[in-house]
Length: 120
Length: 111
Image (cartoon, rainbow over all chains, first blue to last red; front, top):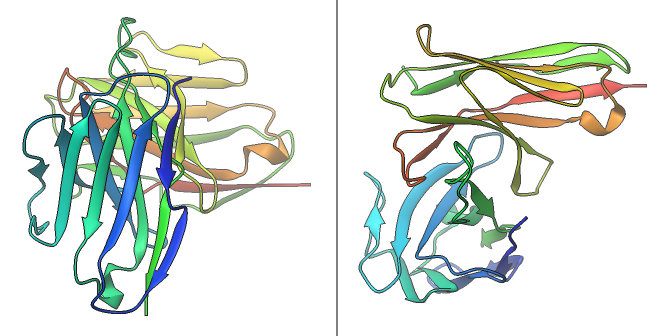
């Protein structure tokens, strides 16, 4: 299957600092990438849809000024958590659409390995 | 009501057992459906897509009932390696842009 990488895989930072997470599609071009957040024992919640060359679309309740998304190329999207606080500690996962043609699989999303953020 | 709901679990079953997971979704306009599995502290991985006619992949069988807005996953002859959380995923539109994840059902297969 398609490969999506994330960096870093984990990060610990002090409250008030900003953290940048990178999401890369390694063997395909992704015009659209997605950023999810997962708290312990909860499911993935979509935060925003990252569109190459245009502004990201944020889900209701997600602060766009706090979670900055940049999708400057067809293989890279970044999520910056600005002025991180302990409540931002979570597992952040990105995914990308792989352009397949088979029915019901053409819109399959491939997930990166996730970034575990701990804010002290 | 959540848009996608699943059996709360956890399911603890012996090796070799057959186990079934249920999922319901509330948005009747949903277009495509998937089962993902997620291991602890890992990203979700696609297990199988769910087709209207039902589909089977080895020990795994998925069924979709659009009228009842219900999706199921059956695992036969469960293995220890099947232990994971199973996520029911519903795509709201036809462009792969709008995935909604269920809360997941945890399965533990015991020796």
